[in-house]
Length: 488
Image (cartoon, rainbow, N blue to C red; front, side):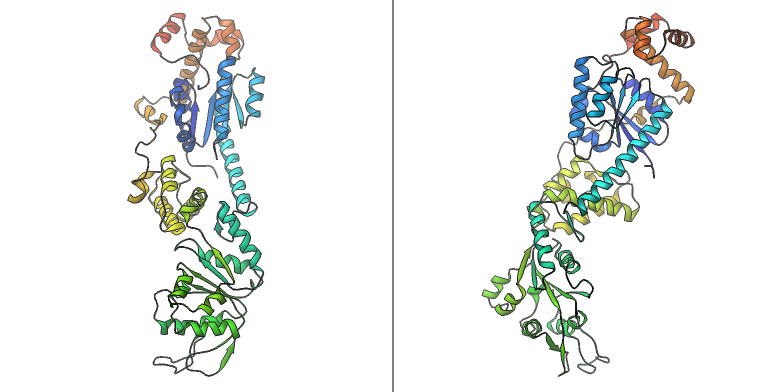
């Protein structure tokens, strides 16, 4: 499905041509013209753009080299938009060079507006499809995803490899890491990669609950075991039989319950509350904590024998501030998911916003990052998420000087009188011929070759458009723009 508004950047000295193309393109397109003095904002421009049109008309050797270097700079940017080149049709050498350097397509000079609309749409659709394919391959084939857990940093790649190796071995696992790092996601990944994948995965958090309630939740009770126990109830340990039991915040498990859990691990048996009947279970235990269990053992707050039973293999999830390479990957993943969930147009981050995300320390880790991106998507109205949509804590560390926005052609268009399509084409042709005649000293044969038309056809156009040499001289005095050519 086509994008509702296609954002095109025209890299050229010729702002007049950019305005003419913007008017002729009509609805569904927003075009910005970027001149030679705005190349320092290349990253911001590419972040805004869906498609780039690079002007390489009437180029000499020096300006061709400059334009090709600019094309290299664009291709060096990660996730850059597709680039179309506006070039003289007879300059096949330059056309081949641009294609070799990664240009998506070429546009013959002078451009046909109907063809240009189709080329922009096709380039965007092809780029979007390739980007989505690369994303899927990176996630599934490149080792960046482990059953919903994302990470491309060396620390996460090492963790993923270790988790996959121990998943098929039926041993107890202790996952450590700060709150919000994704410990439950890692536990689920180990279960789904292991031999118990066809069995149940039962999760329970021991955090901030009374010991009696935790005991009932874990081991269940018989009818009449206590006031209000009108029916027998199966606990989490029993529900996890032939599967995996995940106990989060195991460090909060009371000392009175620790021997009962130890017995489950040693003898594979337990009794419900209010019963003397022994129940045998076959479970794999994965536990997680954000506390230092070794220190708790020294302080007498956690049983040493239980600690060693839990910690057959320890997996540590590093905090997000220690794997900053993953911030961009995670942020884009959450952006795509939230945009689809809330039916929003948001597709990218502004450079200033991404800078703020990468510089923030993330005390709440991945969970906090997900919440921040979700908030920004909900507040967004356009395709680009901005610093203004961040919480105050992140806005305060954003760059003081935002990149100067390049005014869209639509703003200039709003101030100009509305013209018909035919009038716009006539104005475009007139401006193009005037500039070419002036550039070639009113020599019609050379001007016709530069325009790629027959000399007789150029004479007819001059007559139809009522162009005189005096008008060309007047246009030269009124314009301050340099000769046509690529962006420096």
